[in-house]
Length: 264
Image 1 (cartoon, rainbow, N blue to C red):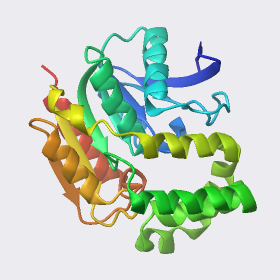
Image 2: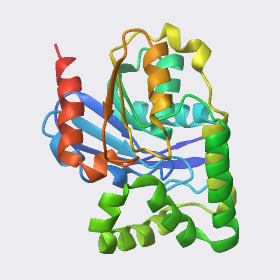
Image 3: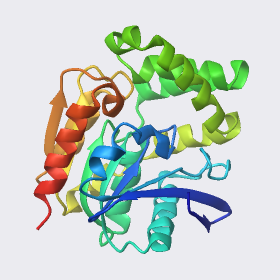
Image 4: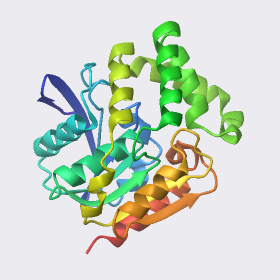
């Protein structure tokens, strides 16, 4: 993976495919590997850039100040990759990074998919994150990863993929920073709230969420769709928080239809 450095962190990124650029940004796990089931289909039509966020994966395991800091990291990666403007697909925390980038660097994002993300940190999310941090601090990374499985994947998918999930939990535990680093990432997304500014977004936007998502309930997506001018909302009956992994063919078809419709 290529690497660039910004504000004390090495930032690793990955490029595949050909065509117009499309950025993929993962959630709190923060790594490019989240998109393993999606990149082959997307790379047939786009030059896909995925990256490990500050504090995760092969990037430096350093604390995060804010979602806006991770947005500035993304701009540094785009500059290093020679990409002036790109379509953007962001999952959960990655969705917030995309919103911050579209607001603060409007010339760099051409179209936006906000997938299973949040407009703010509310009491429900605070309770979930408090427990996640407690597990990480007192029981370690593997316990945190096992609880994350229950938050990301719906029961029907867990029941059919137990062995796969055990392997994923082990690999995920090796890609995260310690409690201090991951705690800073949890805190950054809880503090993110740009709702008062969403009315000035002026780019094609699709908001996607599953109705059985327990980590980022669909009311956040409804709020995004209501506040962003002309945003389209797609609510899917099932798939959980990790819809891109649980129903990859369906997910790929949805986002490709949107992004391809924006190519002129």
